[in-house]
Length: 302
Image 1 (cartoon, rainbow, N blue to C red):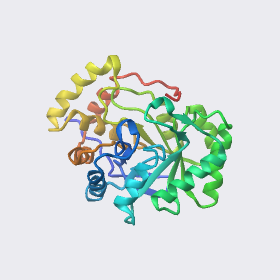
Image 2 (tube, rainbow, N blue to C red; image 1 turned 45 degrees about the vertical axis):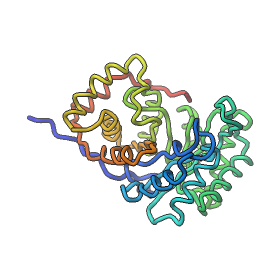
Image 3 (cartoon, helix red, strand yellow; image 1 turned 180 degrees about the horizontal axis):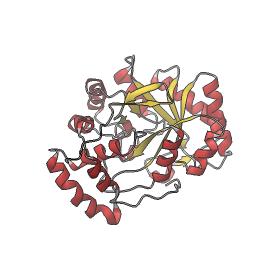
Image 4 (cartoon, one colour; image 1 turned 135 degrees about the vertical axis):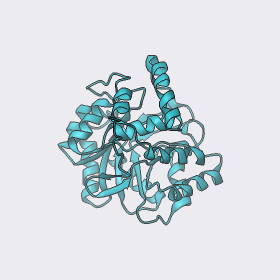
């Protein structure tokens, strides 16, 4: 009997009440080189963001540190007033003071986190975030519990609908869930690198959505990269797709909690990413791709 394909739903629900398209858009690439400064092709960035709506994308992921600030401002310029059904998620907790990544740091001071969230709302032209992430579990200037607690206060005050976590360990995820409902989590996880497998499992168990970093990257596999490429190639041929589309389709089949947010500056690649939802891998193909790379049980912030 020919294996039957496993359906990949077209939508996913965040926090029990926020429905978005299954493939979102990570806006980080719409910045300057090394995520510093404004996107050099300003008009092209505006056009790409507006094209998201035509392609059915209803979830955009950004952060105040992208630029910093320029990414949020570009999104507002392109899309405000926002159409009904469009969700924009942002993050706060990282700071950066220059072009070099060595200037990147994290701040957990609750007063700073509140300022970061409120000023992001202002830049984006929003009254409330449907989803707002603590961007870093690295910060040591304030207890992690106080950082999550401040977002919980802002949620109670109506600034935040759902809380998410990025750059955290599974242990921090558990601590956060003792303070607030955590609706979403992000971590590095793709066809070649399963670093975030522990957080994916924790998200599945808790009912949170999981957004993998670098979801279509084929360069994160290290010693597994060649085997990954050899396995993807015939599947790409079979489905008349690119290897990146197969990698994205695998994520969608891998877990019902998965909300990939691939980024791009190309309209063609955007359309390819959305089209990956229509690829129906068989259960056997999903299992073969899953077995390519060991999946660690624990998760440490990368």
